[in-house]
Image 1 (cartoon, rainbow, N blue to C red):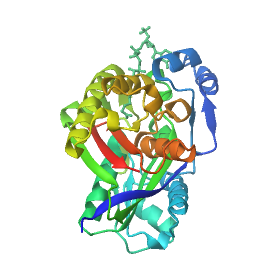
Image 2 (image 1 turned 90 degrees about the vertical axis):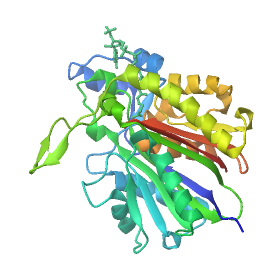
Image 3 (image 1 turned 180 degrees about the vertical axis):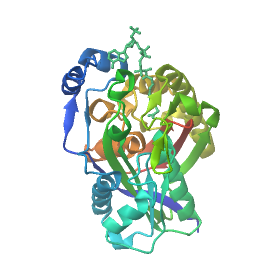
Image 4 (image 1 turned 30 degrees about the vertical axis):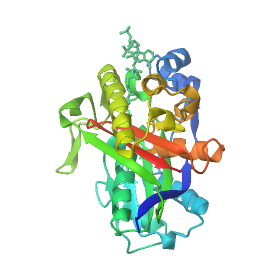
Length: 325
Ligand code: ACO
């Protein structure tokens, strides 16, 4: 009998503090940084984002999302035998955010680790969980994307600080006799590391280098558009499916223009693209499961739909997961 993995529950969580573009522009203006709702909406499609309170960490956001996903799957935390957290804003240098979250869930013993692939983190984590389920190492996994990107933003740099937000999304992935995950595709190319990075590090009790996000937006934009099309096509080919078989495209929510361009290349109408970037901004590894959960709970995504999840981000990393929901 073949063994596959299947998503049986989704969940998400956004910290309560919501800032519209106008709210953020007013806060930035007080610091002498000029931006506007018009500029942000026109260039990115973003209208609002959520920021976590100073004492709230990625594991706190991830915990709420995980609980919501467990409830949707009809499982208890004690049923889980694998936890993977995708994050680039971990609670600590170590231990992993996944182990901290495991403890907050009140369970112990199952493997728990982080995956660091920035905005591709969730498709990386889902692919790893799928592999561990297929090999029989795990049967019921929690795969979580959780970020507090507000902690690494330079609020004097208007070209980046308006783009990102905080949040978490989670799925329960269970072993199944039927797919489930149909095909996956992961890539990285470290030569592009400098176009999107947080170059600082901790050394000798100090932060060495700059601990805030740096991005060459135009270079990222060009790379993202190309690799998202390639990865979607490679994943479809592995599954023996066509563009038209996709019911919902759930791309990383960074910029509406990147999403529109990907949809056009895949000949998909925008009505088949899940869009939450307008309300969440770019939540990095959390953006795909946040968007998926929003579409599931809104009744857009239904059981049996074919979903194409696509991530792209720092590293440079990119990849896709094609699945039957
Ligand atoms: N408000 C007002 N004006 C601004 C702002 C702002 N927030 N930011 C930049 N500008 C100005 C610039 O100073 C520039 O002014 P100038 O012409 O007088 O010099 C002008 O707007 C145009 O700036 P560009 O950088 O050329 O604007 P562009 O159209 O390239 O848009 C953007 C910038 C939105 C960042 C775009 O390049 C982009 O979306 N890139 C992809 C970014 C992305 O998706 N990153 C995440 C992917 S991976 C991950 O998620 C980690």
